Length: 504
Image (cartoon, rainbow, N blue to C red):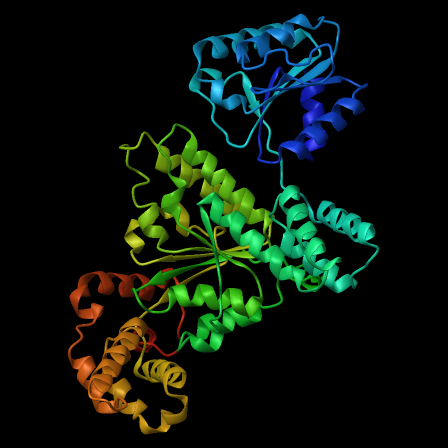
């Protein structure tokens, strides 16, 4: 059901108090006016704290700097006169006892009248005493069709056109922005060059990054990593490559659903985060990084509101990759009662969205401690697959050394004994191998020469891998994966060799 359909239904059903959280004040007011007109030309009255009511000269300035008077004005309008009263930024006054009481009184009296109050606010903040009388109605960001219509309107004003492919790319890059932001960045481009050009896609993307940064919930993460930058993990890479075109229209026509996501469980430093970045780059999709800790706010209801905002923004930017790093740390206290159930409610909202989402948001979650994850997270249907990313085998370590040294010393790669390096670094993770090379470079640099295989081996001898310092935790993870609880990310790994021996 669209916003127009749902809003008109609430008006017809005489819902007295409607709360619309959205930063798009101008656009939502236009939508309210359209709905009011569709229902027999209902009058629309608009109030704000600075100017009071502004709908017509007779009411101009009424209720100025007086929110209680703004509510009393609703009662001054005859009971048989239908109208919608739009109150801007009224969330700031809801904690006032006189405002709260007046709204509850109005909720009773307006049930039998064709008058409705619509609170338009950039944030959702409802005190407990008003939860029963206020109805929250989400106002979605502009659709691709609305964005395309706005771009075409601006193009017609400049008497220029864009190729259909560039127009589609411009529209796709603008998804997730408010219509006001889209107008602002496109008119800036027109002011600079007199027309819209293909290069303006980058301007729109930069505006999107700015918009996402302002939410302080999601980060727009640049990606340059490729699938080839991942050493080993052949099963995982094959799985990803098979789904490279799964977001295309051709896949929809074939009957394939959108891929849902991956849960990567395993030992720290084995390439889980690198995989998330490489997926976004290979699939040519924007990568959004969620710091789950930012979802939690100090005010009542703020955490749940931020969670809904995160979901709304991710779906507006779809198709995209949503990367949630170390999700086990975020929801490890879901059973705790110490935060009045906030973590549990946020987790419930998030887990329900994972199970029911229809939008092409591919979630890549990583976890180091499987014991800390709630059992609901591991149930089938949340993710397409759960992969275990274990310690690399000798062959995989050789491949990881080759990846790093190709980047660091492409002209001198053959001078390094990769086979020996892999043999001499048992139990090393990919991150520890990278750190070993950095330490070897320090050794060579301090002696004014290039680093050698011996320098790498010397550096490796000084590093105690996590496999030894956290032996019990890693053993538990390996036993969990060996029991068939997850799919192995590597065909040739320490754990896969062990499983093969068990099957023989």
